[in-house]
Image (cartoon, rainbow, N blue to C red):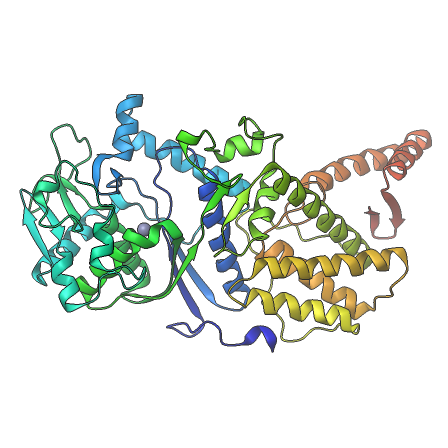
Length: 497
Ligand code: ZN
């Protein structure tokens, strides 16, 4: 079948292991976090829909991510703690919870495991020992550095990004503390803590803390094994973070460890890179409330999610008011078609809540009789399985919208099998894999209307029981004026939009 083609070859049949670099929690989640959040959420859901048992690990960086080139300067979390006079773990707790809340609003399901770097210092110390024993690291004044030159003689440093050692020298800044390194491209595996550094642990080399790149090598191995299927993250992490991870893996366990690297591209704002100095650094709470000066209005989390899905994850994505407003309109059309479709099918939209995944495994065939509906069904799976081409999937969905609208207008006749196929696409793909939600209506977690309707119909039932016909008729007529039809059946009251 179209969607069963072998595009993904897992290490263990029927299982998929995925590690994604999560946030460094020292500030609010921003647009740069939304993209990997949504991208890898869709990938995990797609793999589940294709029948794999997925273990998705996404870490929280709560120590060791330094300000300059990730490897020099002050620890980002320790700095925030110093500025706000907090305990570093208070900073971590605050922003981890706020990150979770932003992801919940975006309908990004929680990962299977969310390990923290500070909870894996013992494992990181063990990894440093192994790399030292293998001869690819050296100790210098209580810190331990990876010997990139030595490694590059025996293996290839830069295999992922295609950079060579000379390339990596360019742009490397001379910074304080570099005196401890033999070469500027060497990176820290363990750093001796300066007296003012508040987060530190004992080790054989010094009272200090692990280098940032090490945590992902160690936590990936701990939860997914020496070799696992997929490693994801933003494109900006490819070098040096993931390149260093590969070098550490080869040096400590003799294997690169990762079968597929998946990187989402960066976002821009009105064509510019997002940055605090450019005044276009937009956090997700600002986006959802419309409070940033660059925003003309508030954008609902589902608009942001849908907008992200309209671009291929490997392409850049430019946020502008115009593009977001277009996405808002497109999403509204898709959701209206969903309501019409479920009404045609005489059933409710799926209503699973955040974190629950009730959508089914992709069927091998569809019962559609219309060639157009069949083509949409095939197109949806072809695009999803073609390197997660979500913009292609979205354009197939708008083909479905066109068919639903034509059927509603009476210009196209859909068979029962056609409607069943379209319902499966909305259940499993729109609300399932793509994780969209009908916040205005009743679809997949959009409980607002359903909850209100339950309340209103309860009032109508009470009025009827009390033989208060004026009130019950008034409720029925008011709902009809809103386009909501209420029907009394022997099983109770049914309503449709
Ligand atoms: Zn990482």
